[in-house]
Amino acid sequence: MYAEEYLPDDDIDYLDVSVISIEETSSIDTQIRDQRKMRELYKRTDKDYYTYKVMNFDGESVKLEKIELYSSPLTCNGYIRNAATGIRMEHRAGSKYNDLYFTMMDVANGTHSDLNNEPRKLFYSNPEECERHQKINIPQKIKEEWREKYMRAKAIL
Image 1 (cartoon, rainbow, N blue to C red):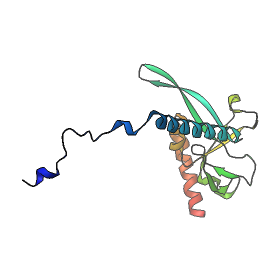
Image 2 (cartoon, one colour; image 1 turned 90 degrees about the vertical axis):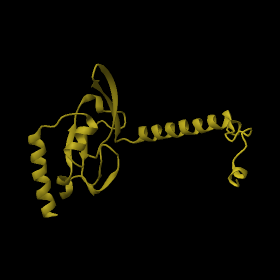
Image 3 (tube, one colour; image 1 turned 45 degrees about the vertical axis):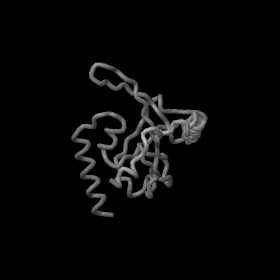
Image 4 (cartoon, helix red, strand yellow; image 1 turned 120 degrees about the horizontal axis):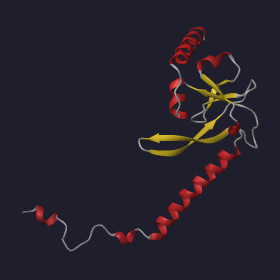
């Protein structure tokens, strides 16, 4: 048959492991580690970034889980920042667009840093995003009140 001519020989090893060297994988790991370090240093210079740890009960084990947050300025004219992602929104804090976001204040003592000593104002797209991000439960009554306020703001804007 003609197909036999195109089959590979059994004595040739097509997966040549010697092509990838340890030095190459080591340099890739070093680059990734350096990128992570730079990202962490950048976050630490951001005065609106902070973290805290929360206990997470997973069945039988207890784990400390790190939560990263981005706060928005308390004064007017600063852009609203999503607390979970850190993305700055197109709207400004203190404007008529505040009702489009679920807002909460974090006044715990552990949230203060050398760069920012004020209470933290956190903006989320909705209460469910806040619950997932901070691993808390928000009462249904607060969620319903926010939805009504959100619908009124959407109708006006």
